[in-house]
Every structure is written in C-alpha cells, then in structure tokens.
Image (cartoon, rainbow, N blue to C red; front, side, top):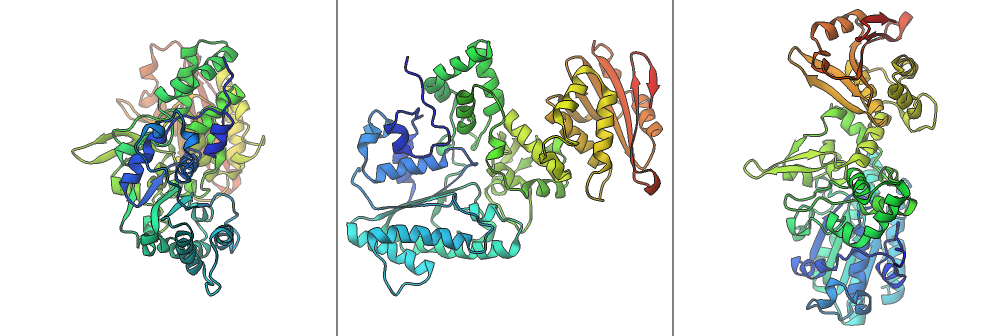
Length: 525
C-alpha cells in the first residue's frame, strides 16, 4: 500500500492534488456556496481549513477542472469558465507596526495592478481597490471573484491597543466597503476569519453579507468528521497504533479524546481539528499541537477579568446573537472563546434557543488551562523555574503531597499582582493539577457543603480547602466538620486532606498548609 503523504500546514489546493498529498474532499460545498449569495462570510478557528477552502475555490474559479478529477465538484453542474480572482491573505504581516495593515493591502494591490492595470489618479487604498475590480472586469470581460483570508488578524494581534485598533479598523472598513459599491462587477466574494467583529462596524455597510458560520448546512465545511477521518486516514491511524503498541480502536479513541468535539451548528457533526490530526500522524505522537499556533494574548485576561472561573467554563449558556458577535467594547470573552475554538456547542435547546457550551477536547483543555495560568502568572510560559509541571505531576502520581505543597508554596510566594483572594489560589492550583493530567473537580457540592478542590490519580485522592488571611486550622476544621471525605469511604485509594491558608501580612507573607493522611489519622505541618 502506498504510504500516505500528509499536508501538514499546507494550504494550497493545487499543490496538495498535484503532489499526491491526502485531500479530504470538501468540494461538494462549491455549488451551494455559489447559490448562497454574492457575498459570503465564514468564521472558524485558526488551523481549521479556511485557507484550504479558499484555495480550492480559487482553483475552481480559475477553471482548473483537471485538479478536481474524481472529486465531488467534478460531477456537479458547474460553470467552469475562468473568472479573474483577487485573493487577499492577511496572515503574513506584523500588525503591531503602525502601518502594518496598510502595507499588506498596498502589497496586494500592487501585485494585481501588474495584471489588470492601475489608474494614475487613484491614490488611496479605497480608490485603488475600486479601480482594480473595475479594470479586472474590463480586461477579462468576466465578473471578478474576491477571496479574503483571515481578514481579522490585524485586529486580533493588537486587540488591546485601542489607538492602533481604531486605525486598523478604519482602514479595513474602508477597504471592505468597496465590495458593496462594486457589486455590479463582482461575481462572488468569500471572506473568512476567526471572528466576526460586528461591534466594530467593519461590515456595517454590508447588509447583504451572508454569514454561514452557524448554518447547519455548512457546519462541516471545515474540520473533519470521524467518517472522513476513517475513510481517508485509516492507514495512518493503523501506523500510529502500531508505533504506540496498541490496537487501532484504542488509538482512534485517544485521537478522538484529543482532537474531536468541535460543533459549530446544532445539526452539524462533531469535528476533528485537521492540523492536529495531521501532526499526530506525521510525528507519531498524540500531543497538544494546536495551542501554539496562535491565540489572542488578551483572551485569558478577558476571561479572568469577567470572573469566569476555569472550572465553570464547561456549561456556559449563550444565545446565537452572543456567539455571533465580537467586540472590544464590552470585553465579554464568550463569543471570542467560541469563535477561536476554545468553546464548542455541547447542546442546543430549541425551545429557549439557548446554546450550552464546553471545551471540545483534551487538546483544547490543555491549551486553555495553560492560557489561563499565564493570566495569573506569566512565568507559566517559561521553561523550568517554578512551573515545572513534570515535577508537580510526579509528586501527585507517587503520593508525595509534601513535595507538591512545597513547590506550590515557593511558586505562590512570588505570584505577581496584588488583587489576590481565595479564588486566586484555588484557580492556580486547579490549573496546575489539570496541566499535570489529573482528574480535577472544583467546588463539588456535597451533602454538608462545597469542597474547594479534589484531585485524583490512580492511587491517591487529594482534598484541598483554601483560605485567605485566615488560618490553616479553620480550613482543616471545615474539611472534617463538613465531611468532604465521606463520599470516598469505599474508595481504595489513599486519601489526603490538605488545608491551606495564604497569609498576606507583611511579616509573614506566604502559603501555610497542613496535611492529614486520613488512613493514618495523623497530621503534620
């Protein structure tokens, strides 16, 4: 059997087809997209296949039918007559620079003006773009196709710099405003991005822009269903299973746990992240690849500042309007978390028209928890130092809760910021335990009260109670008086009770703790 070639990071349709890389066919969407309307918008997370969809559309509009042999579009009743295609890709630029957005647009315009001409009297970006569309139409006799990739990157990269944000926003608004005024010359326009910034009015003039981001019929246009995964990539999964020395079903189950779970419309399919799956099959390792591909740095601060605890993210409820609009004015993180892929639809209640959201999979959990930990302490991004996750994980796995607490004590002593409280230390410990790969439950409602934090390994259970500027004794008394350990009476694992108090007094700042081994009924500090 011919070894599969995986197009990791490749976004060019013709190269994937011509060079024999695996291509999971999405060309069945071309015809309905053309019937959808003249101007179409799609929001999907980074690394989810938007660029490849645009490249596929580009090949179609260029009339390259040879590339589609054997694919769904080849058997459809489509007009393969070539059209002039103007393709803008906003990925490759540093938008923290004052003129970043303007420079990349000017570069696009110069490239296409070499093909279709430039009017000397045109000076501004808006004037040149209008003339470019008109000139392309006059030169070819065909209406123009406009494809825009990652239109929102200039905003997401500098989201908290209000002055620069407003400048980029103004340029983009002027740029995209041309599409509506030139609709007599445009055959089709397709715009993609991570977020639809409805509250910054870039598309305010676009009353005929059709947003298909949450449409059921386009739910699976990007990302892979499990049926597609198995159909096209089964040999690769089998190779990975052999390398892991386990059977095919076990490996598929782990791939599903890490990379499946995205849902963008109520009647869509659960989807896999294409980028991460391809990386796993190529590198023969199931790992959290997606987080490092780019996340708005301000997102964690939005979550933290809105008082959303990390353990309360699963189960957030929102309306469709909530999920469809992002703006920097109100700083609500939920829409951006959904559109960037940190949240996915878990269920939809048709009667109330409410969506319940969750973290889609283990890869996203690890990315989100790492992101949140950096909101509390930027040192979490550094190698080694106080955030040596391997050491924390080893302590929990072997039952060395004393070692774990000493590391935690040292780490929290230098925690940045001053607006700390009990929730701060509970959140940091929760995130730390989750990143160690343990099962972790925060604020469990018991019959006599709510426990702060419970951490589970194969051999041990750790029950934490946190206090702030109170006392270790008060924390331990609460654990015992409310019988947080009672529900584990029949559990064979060794159980530890950990009472912790963070003292902020000047002469004695730091974490105090007491550990009780409930099996031995002995305590030490």
